[in-house]
Image (cartoon, rainbow, N blue to C red; front, top):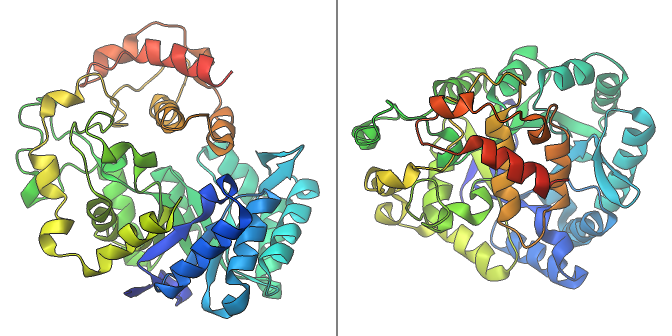
Length: 379
């Protein structure tokens, strides 16, 4: 296993990390065994955004024998209310939820205290001006959290986090589908030069990666596999399938990225991810997959490029589509995805069906129909 310095935190993190989101799916003993196997393979960073007691207990028991060898991303603002996940900035909810996490994880500290999930400007403003951020600072001053981080999917919020001077690292969603922006609206030529340059990357996201590199803000990666959608040509927006090794390499070749936190259901999936460390260049090559993708496969599929803006109802269409696509990859809608969708304001239910966005979409996505299906799915 190779390790990278997580920006100015100074922590050395394994290139392959552990995203704990799926732990609640399995018996406790299986989850504990999976975490211990990850440690044996050299994995040393694990994310615990989940507020449910089962997931937290599994992580705590899985790392108990070597707590000081693990780097835990623990989230502040992820709470468990009435048996379900609720994102909150209310200290009446936030404080006991964090204290519960601290107790279940063990050791008396959290390595990376994450300001949990901010994607909207008004949410940033609320979180960063008031008692919530005062509580985060207090935890840091006391040494209860050793470093301050933030999780977001929004490059604009991430850039503000870098600029604010308080945040030392960021958990950010990185994969080719999220990053890619057409170089032109001509589908026959938009990937012509991809193998030679990164001109296909959305400029705002590319600028964020460069900013983080310049400011020594380390990135850890979530949603690197896009919920498994990129493994199947039928569900990939590229019309071509990627392997886990290719997607891991994609993430790890972005500037400032230090570790990709993959989700695992089985030991076999864990070992497939760790196999990246011994993979050859041919196995890692993702550019040829994109360059040779059947470009017509983009028709009708959202790539989150943002060309659909502006919406007269101010719907974040790309984000709505992300949550819809993540949700339909699972037998039932994950509670985390449901909660994140409902945090959008406005959401898909506000769509008036004007279809003005569709005229701007280079991929002919039936956006109004997708808004209708999304509203029904998450109702």
